[in-house]
Length: 283
Image (cartoon, rainbow, N blue to C red; front, side, top):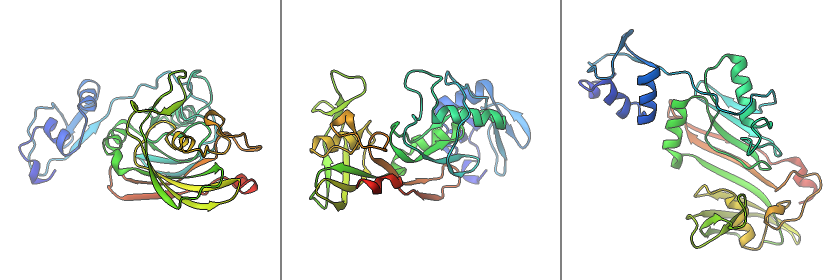
């Protein structure tokens, strides 16, 4: 511990230097333990310069999702985070049936195999039929730090839309809310939440265009809704007016770049992923 925090209580130190959420701090106090220089201590104990603080986190509840064996396409992994390259056609978490195969159920199975006492902490989600990079926190502390700094996480997508898109680049700034007649579908709505999508044209043909997107907000189905609103639904996105594409699972949308600040090392991390090869056959 540095001199700057000398005289702080353990609780104050964890809140300020450790950036613990109050919820996580409460869980440690109730079911975990705090050690200073190897001896278990109470949260009120004041710290001195040079003290070494160690935290024993409580075992996490696994929840209702049923662990299942499956392929986890791991791009990167350390003690705190995992980056996956998700294929299209599988949900990140099961929407209804908790026994449905999902990225979360595969994670839980892998954690049980490793005797790892944590649940699945999803930081960046993707729709069932969206492929590409996604970020996982491997424990509650990592998850807390990452979700506290969502502005430090950026994602770049590439998609194929129907029609000849002519604008080179621009910003769609239209609020998005839930459709009144559906629990799944979203629409541009004056009473929706602020939603901003930057776009950059990669290639335009008569029947379809390839576009790169950067999300400035993170609304459900944001790219899909904004492009349908502009009259260029994503290829294969039948929920928002697109036509089904043979051989392609759902909408042609892929998270090709993920950038974030590592929650512990503070190192800038950037990962990239190519879209499915099947796209080249129809666009």
